Image (cartoon, one colour):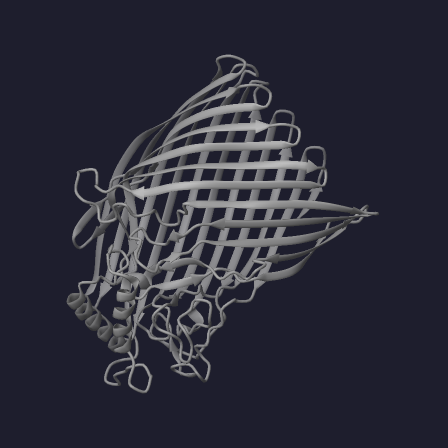
Length: 593
């Protein structure tokens, strides 16, 4: 980052970022020991391409942002232009049922993905925004901003997580996002503060999807799966709640997978059928127009009690168009719907004394309805509404800070999304009502000028209601929300050692969380047990030096943990798993100029 004043009123900044990290999981698809050796692969157009494999879960980011600022007595203008490019290897959606040739199904071992050079994510972003702030006087000011973003993303991923082409996918997403907002702010400097504002948002996107399968392998997979589910009465689709044990499910999957290999361990094949079948493109288009109007007033009833009341009105139009390409031709379905809603907010804050403050908040939030048009007609979900309540306390003294809160989120018409196994389209349905409640706290103790201790702890109770709003039984009733640990927290110790002209800044951070489920169905096996992670760093600074040096280790104890499970493969019946980062150690050098 580089700053350059131009004159008393104008300045310029340019900032850049370049980051490269090799993949953390080896992809053995093109090795001599893989199922298909160095045989050619196929892209999403059905074309043969040379065998290609790249280690998975890496990072590649290049970004540049320029900022110009003009500042006068009452007027400030800030303009920004940014570009970012990502070209990253594929995500490790590794199958927990089908092992690489000679390997295992553990997500922490090598993978074998046969998608070739299309495996990975390529993303280009261009963004432009403008901010204008104008002070009419000491009490009244105007804030306005506008933005435009163009995003292009291409991704190829191995949906089944194995070398077998049960289902691979490729998509191109082209989206433009633009909008503007304006806010008029009044602050008396004493008891009253208020603002009114408006904003508009326009988003347009088009998403062509391709699905690639080996027709013989996929037909065999579908037929065997249907037979096993019918005879066992156990659903392998992760979106269907089941009382079956993990052992029963894994035994069923083992029988399914065994039918995909010959007696010598090679994958089944049929030379009479083509090696690749392209399904699609399935083209999903969406247009979104939202106008929002907001007003809020904050008033000190006394010197210690502040009351805030606000309201937001939303008016939105959603348009979707889905095009399905099959052997019989292309079929297009579209729909447009208008929605509006009013969302209130209330808050009260009380300064008990110079150290203590208590507060209470209420707000209504909303997740917009989803409009989906297909051969069966137009499906429109209800908006998901959440009423949030929280009561908190804050304490601050010379060397101690504490904040704590209890909260409840009441959901109405909770929306659940899942991936269609055939088209890979995200399907959203309204599943019922639910409640999330919890308590959390954080404390910081400055023992001395060189030693700071911080701890946080949270408890969460997040369950789906037993029945939907109309009283019917909800199949996820009593289940835990996905990614909602009952207990989570962190401990941070920061110590600075002073040695002559050097400062050594040592930082220790341990975070932990209890078990989380990755699917709302709480499907057996798709969870991460309780675990903790520890990051440490040691930073060396010298007086009057522009350089600083840091040694860091993330995940010090090399804990193996999952960040995702299930995914598209879980909808097929063979879930995939994404591992978290292993221990990473390195050195950072800082230079100020």
